[in-house]
Length: 300
Ligand SMILES: Cc1cc2nc3c(=O)[nH]c(=O)nc-3n(C[C@H](O)[C@H](O)[C@H](O)COP(=O)(O)OP(=O)(O)OC[C@H]3O[C@@H](n4cnc5c(N)ncnc54)[C@H](O)[C@@H]3O)c2cc1C
Image (tube, rainbow, N blue to C red; front, side):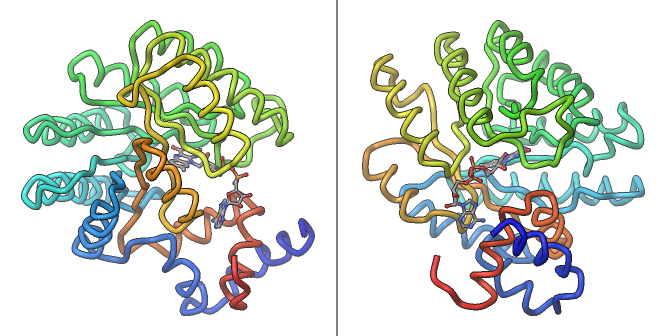
């Protein structure tokens, strides 16, 4: 399947946009804020919490960063006005991280200040290895001023245990994921089993240290491993939440909710849905299999 996946990834730029839209529709709430709000409302009615992401990472101008910042503050305002159960996820490169760190800090601060006014929460996503240190710096600068900000750690990175031990000491709210970017072996674990083992080891450190954890995965090995740990350690439901991407493994999502776990769905939306979808697929060729199925109508 890997060869087929890689072939699909290679031909993706030539796949007509409407066909890409056919599969992307499942993973993205739509192009507008209204689309995102409708998706959130539906998920809330199914007892799922959400986190909204305004799409648009690869920016090249400060104007685009400001547009992205304003997009995020509008989301927070709409959540508050419509009394939805959602927080916000942000990517610092969309706020100018690679252009001017102080400018990015200012934009992030504006967003988090908006969240504070409605008692909401902002999660800073983790991007590729070139952003890790700067992302942690911005997170810490924000955390020194605000309680309601969290970070993401990627289990495939060799550095993550050290990062997590520091974050636990700082009582950080951490989303733990495998990591989506293609990284070299010098910085990241490359085999599936090794990543799974590290994920569960890091999760244990977070739980033992009393951090609130967003367990972000669709992998049954990790979901089952997390549930085992939760039960062994007798953790309260207020110490963690499961997190899943919109459109992925809906049945698992429903089951976790039925079992009484808190669950949050990551809801991306925005006019940049196309670039996001293609980039994600390129970054993680395994995903191409799902595209193939979606394009050719094979059930998942
Ligand atoms: C809420 C959330 C936030 C995230 N934030 C970040 C972040 O800030 N930084 C970062 O680097 N990464 C982030 N990720 C991505 C993450 O790092 C992984 O790349 C991604 O979740 C896939 O890993 P997995 O643990 O789900 O395992 P996988 O092994 O990829 O998936 C497990 C199973 O889920 C199913 N599945 C997975 N994807 C699909 C799909 N698209 N369609 C249908 N079925 C599918 C398949 O059955 C697969 O076998 C986030 C993920 C989630 C869920």
